Image (cartoon, rainbow, N blue to C red; front, side, top):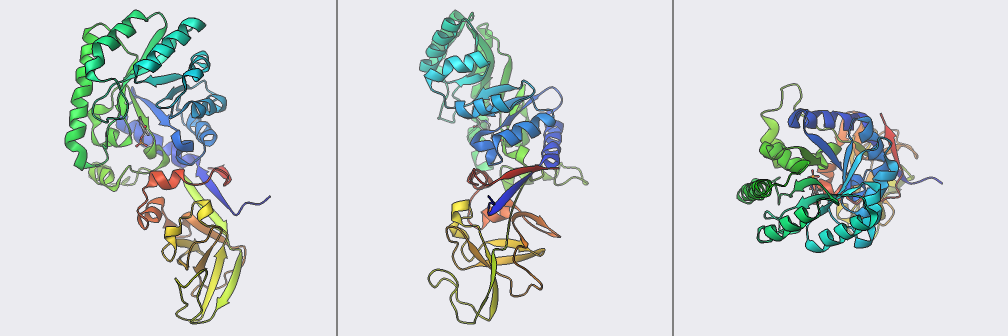
Length: 384
Ligand SMILES: *Cc1c(COP(=O)(O)O)cnc(C)c1O
């Protein structure tokens, strides 16, 4: 069966992004590829294969189900880490498979210890400490109890990491808060080390922290958005811009392109309304192309009378409302357009380009959200 659109994912773009991130973090730091949210919409299996081809051997998932998908897709025996959700009943399977996970509360720590004792296999844990994100993490006040549990169960625990997550390193507005978090993390880290604990890796940085607070890089960075070719925010890009070499001012490359084709053409008379309701009345005799993409495919309804797509290499506008399955596009000024012609929703066509950012800006949706809302069932294919 044919789908109404497809997504292309560029291997070479991913490689370039990793090269750039590598140049930022140095040779010694592990780059963990964050693949939560179905690898930011790209597809976990696609990204595991592409990333391993680019030398990545560490992946970060949000939840146990994602981690298992990485485990099945990995051909290089990569390390896998869960940063968020798992059920206590998942623990045995994760421990058996050698999948590591964040531990940020006593309940999970106790259950982990029990599961590891039962299996007689060490559990690999990353101890997450609260530094000011106020979502998950052991409080500073809990440090004595935490230390005691870790010390008492060294026989069943591998302390794979000591970690935290920053609350908004992508915006200068949060500067004071992030600075405070860095200090708190170091206080916790120094205290645990002084008490005699050691950890395989210290890791705190996401993409924005890596670029804007290089002292947060440490043994490992957890990189999501930048590996997919986007700056966390325009602000992060501006902050970095001056220090980028003259011949490489645009080191992050988008992997994703989203394409469809024209379903049919229609002539519309001046004064006719296009689509549902009366949101668009033809101001002249027009030629309209129907494209079989709508809000059910992730093309937001908010793009009604606003969205742009590429046809014949030209930027053309959505007219009327975005419906569940289609949009109408004004092609009155284009010549020789035919049914079946390619329509680019995100990506390049001849000299023009629609970036995810510009797509998102018109409806105030950040890259992260737009990418992860691309439906799972749109076919994705890997290209060079
Ligand atoms: C999502 C996430 C990251 C990666 O964030 P990016 O901004 O996409 O680089 C890193 N660490 C944690 C804990 C996360 O949840």
